[in-house]
Image (cartoon, rainbow, N blue to C red; front, top):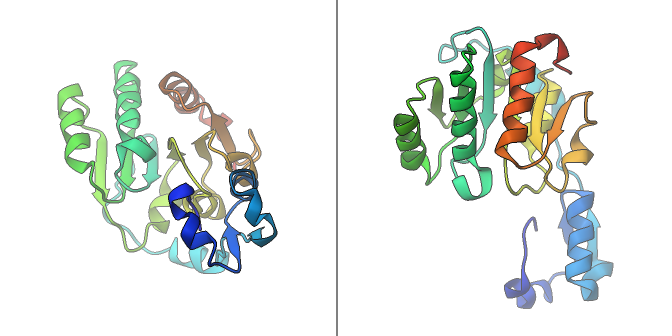
Length: 212
């Protein structure tokens, strides 16, 4: 289970094992449900790194190379994934006169709201690609992978970006420090528009600071 609350208590009582996908999730579950501590354990996501690298070499046509390309892979959900915040960051980067494109692979209930916000803010270089059968070539060809979520368990997309050699900027969700070392594979920033904007701006202006 990735996300549980007290409404799941009857179900939890019937389980022999409760597996958490991160150490942070395990600790939270044990704190919230101490009566089930002996059933809760951490089992990481299984990732086939070799297959991901192989698929990342496939040709792509929907990702023309610009001066600086940012990629986000997530559900289009403003409440949890904060894609609207990314649009506002893109607006500020445009106002600074920086040249970049920000692509988002994924679908979700906030698509219409995101497109409307892009229109309202006149942000034409924030591009929704929809669901992608193979997102790995996009990851490999991007200059930066960004995940600006408000909530996360332990997002596999971050691990996948690192596997194909793309530096990441992620917000400081519970498992962030389990996935990257700040300043090595990428950067961990507070869940604030200003912090995300400043970090991305710094990397566009100073690409030599890109890690990975």
